[in-house]
Every structure is written in structure tokens, then in C-alpha cells.
Length: 112
Image 1 (cartoon, rainbow, N blue to C red):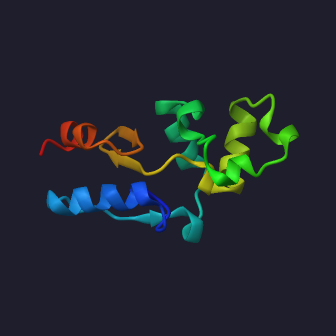
Image 2 (image 1 turned 90 degrees about the horizontal axis):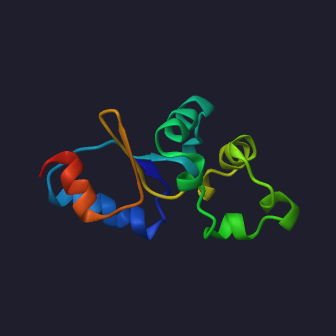
Image 3 (image 1 turned 45 degrees about the horizontal axis):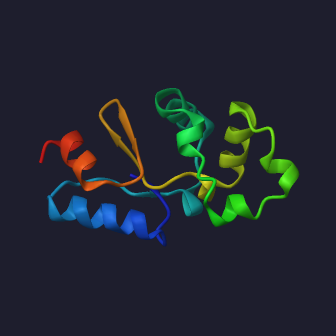
């Protein structure tokens, strides 16, 4: 699971996983960063539009010129520079990538 420790949605997802006795490694991309190859993989599976959290404080604080005319290349550059713009959590389950947390989606993905 990827996210930031202080995110309420990440906390909910981690509690759900713990409650269902599903072990996972947590990667705090605020503290540990995020590599371009992993981000490219996520974008390839779910699209940059789903990953880029335009409601995040980090995104909202960007200058208007940085928010306009976004395309995949610019969005990925922004997310690599400031991973807190990524919608959280990101959970890798086999070859699938889940973005955000919904208990029913997690349950269907992990089979518990």
C-alpha cells in the first residue's frame, strides 16, 4: 500500500486490511518518495486522471498556470515532484492497482 501516514483514508484502509488479517507493506511516499517506473505502471493501469487528486491541498495550492493544460507528462511530473497529489491509498493487488478506499472494492480484490 502506498500513501501518507497522516491521510484519513489511508488509515481507514489500513484498519480494514488489519481487521481482515491481510498483511501488506506500507510505503509512505512523503517520507520514502516514489520512483518514476512505479508511477508509470500505475498510470498505465488506471490512468493519470484517476491518480491525480485535484482536490488535494497540494494540488489546490499550485499556481493556476501549473494546473491548466494538464496532460499525462505534466501530471506525472507533478506527482513525482509532490507525491501528496496522488489520490490515496494506492494498493497493488497482484497485477491490479486500486486507487482510493472502498471496503467492497477491497473485499472483491482480496477475496475476504
